[in-house]
Every structure is written in C-alpha cells, then in structure tokens.
Amino acid sequence: MTPATARVLNALLAQPGTPRYGMELMELTGLRSGSLYPILARLAGAGWLARQREDVDPSAAGRPVRSYYTLTPRGADAAPRALAAAAAVYWSPSDPSDPSDPTGPTGPKAPRSKDDGDGR
Image (cartoon, rainbow, N blue to C red; front, side):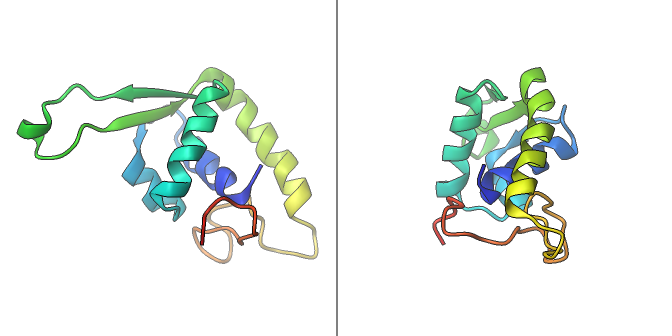
C-alpha cells in the first residue's frame, strides 16, 4: 500500500458510514484528482468502496453530479489491518512520522516516497 492510499483509507475510516465525494477527499488527503481517482477506482474494484452517483439535475444544482464513496463492510473490516501492515513497512520507531496517520506531526500529508502515486 502506498502512503497516498493510506491517506485515502484514513480519511474514509475517520467516519466510515459517511459518504465522501472526490473534492472532499482531495481536501482531506491533500491528493490531486489524478492521484485520488485511480486509488478510488482500485479500492472500488477490490470491493472496499461503494460508489453512488447523486440524483440531481446538474443544471439545477449549478455543478456537476457528484459521485459519493463509502467504505463497504469488507473495506471497513480490511482497511485497518492493511493500514497496520503498511505502517509496519513504512514506519519504524526511530521515525516519528507514521505515514498511515494523516494527522501526524507533519500535518494532513504523509511523507512522500517515489511510489506514492501522487505524481508530485
């Protein structure tokens, strides 16, 4: 698991039953859309996320239709274990910045690695 995926899962686990839309997740994780949406697609493909499009008229709403993402029961069960396993790989006791914790000492973004999928 990449640190970027860990940030997405942590954002969703903060309130597991709350549907989140893309822009909201971008703000919570600090990821750009080009990094976020492939992660959401992979998590949905693995059965960890459910995606639901809102039923609104974009003209009446004055904005595009939003897709909301919610952890499935499978995702809510598996994500904490996957985050713990990732923390064991990315974090050591000598490094106080735990990449699976989006609220760590460096703020909402976890330390970057070249494979975090963020593109920056």
